[in-house]
Amino acid sequence: MSRADLSAPQGRGELRDRPQTARTRRTTFRATLLRNELLTTFRRWRTLALLAVLAAVPVLVGIAVKIETGDGSSAGPGGGGGPAFISQITNNGLFLVFTALAATLPFFLPMAIGVVAGDAIAGEANSGTLRYLLVAPAGRSRLLLTKYATVVVFCLAATLVVAVSALTVGALLFPLGDLTTISGTQISFAEGLGRALLIALAVAASLIGVAALGLFVSTMTGSGIAAMATTVGLLITVQILDQIPQLHALQPYFFSHYWLSFADLMREPVYWDDLTKNLGLQALYAAVFGSAAWARFAAKDVTA
Amino acid sequence: MGEVSAAEPERREARAETGEPVIATRGLTKRYRGGQLAVDGLDLTVPAGSVFGFLGPNGSGKTTTIRMLMGLIEPTSGTARVLGRPMPRATRAVLPHVGALIEGPALYGFLSGRDNLIRYDSADPAADPRTRRTRVASALDRVGLTAAAGKKAKAYSLGMKQRLGLAAALLQPRRLLVLDEPTNGLDPQGMREIRALVRELASDGTTVFLSSHLLDEIEQVCTHVAVMAQGRLITQGPVAELSAGARGRLVVTTPDPAEAARVLKEQGVGDVVVTDDRVTGEPPDRDLAEVNAALVTAGVRVRGFTVERASLEDAFVALTGEGFDVAG
Image 1 (cartoon, chains in turn purple, yellow):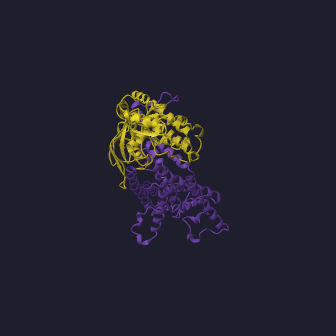
Image 2 (cartoon, each protein chain N blue to C red):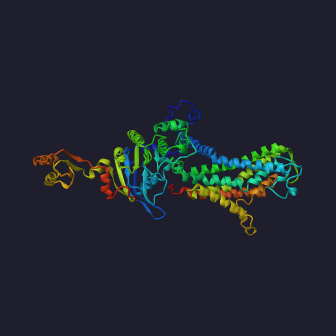
Image 3 (tube, chains in turn green, brown):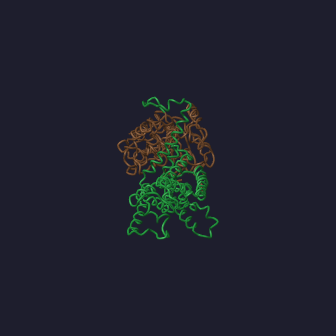
């Protein structure tokens, strides 16, 4: 507004010409809501508690494996039980990253996403803050996009928390070094780290579908708790249905069907088929439920 | 969406048209999905620069109207124009100029008062982030919350929350303030402060749209008033006109009430009522000095002779024909 009373040098603002300022400001400010949203989300006690639970999983797995193999025997004889890669942790702590992600992906990670996504709009409606955001005016599409972006950032953050916690615990409890891929070839530790990062990204991307579904549910109700419960309930239902052989024809369309494809990144060469199918499916979910959420939210009467 | 660069000139243009009403609705109607008719054919006109009291019992459709004006709910039929532009279509251009307190404050309990305001301010794409901290600080100061700015909002009392809600409406200079029951939950001192604030804002040229069910509050601060009941607009206009509509009553205080009543009836005073030493009635069209002279000539000892102006409450009861707290 009153630009004159700003004593600070305004390099960027002044360089551009007057007619341009409106546009540059707009684009700058679009990010301010996102930044504030991220700050608000990650300052919540609930978000931190979810991340703490996720960070605790690798610690538990690591300690369990350490105790189990304390007498020199290898964990999971024949690789029969437990999450993927668990038998290799004793040889190389880096495998704890893969094990921890495999252990959290079916339930803990999507549950955390379901809580954050389900609460995104419904929680604001529930507390009445939604009407003030809209009157500010945040803009409905802008608010929804901001919310979705925040949930996606949370997917990434949650996955990285698991990975970093696992890497730390793995390094502390087990030896590190070159590792053997599923195909039997040897890769260096540095390349192994690279693969671990790729796997974390693949896992985070696997959650995009749940995030969109949660956001859609969130626009349907005015109660944050109901939205969270519905999303987590859907998650469990889909996972159960994915185990029923009679539903074979439907299963490729379940958002969780290709989740464990991230293990293919540990093959040499990488087997991309299921990975791309997974990414495509997640994109489809994001498109379908993202549009549904938008259609619902853009026309919704906000009476809360 | 695509009118990003076009918004600025249009806004300036809207400011220039001072003669246009700040709020104008035509046949504004809202029927909820259950079939309930909340607002029925509302033709509301709020002149620029007025302090507009929006009055009605609980459930009369005030809040639904405000929500339609703010683009939160879609009207079933009819149109609403705010600052000269159609709502809810022009929310992005209109709402940065509007501060609103709707149905009480809503806050993030886990954030401090200051951070609540920062959040609401970052939601407004027209708000300059470089001046955000200063504007937040001055809004907090304006409602007397500077000392409590760092406290978590969940620790606030109802009155403090109400003040913080008001501060959110004052983050920027506004052309229109929509205040729905702004003194709810405030102590008498707080109510007086809010009234003073409303007057101050109005004297700066801000149009204030104030909904309340407290009649004396409206009477004290408003220049214009509209009355709703059961979803319909019963009347609107300057406060003085409305009160004048309900005529005042002639009140004579005397130790000789019976005699006074007889003389008053002779003088053309209608609806004469005697209670103890007070005789009241509808004033006649003739000069009241003559009525008084007639009383004295007839030997009636007069202690007091006044016309009590009708209060807004009398006007309201006369209009709605019902007690005030009846829900529609």
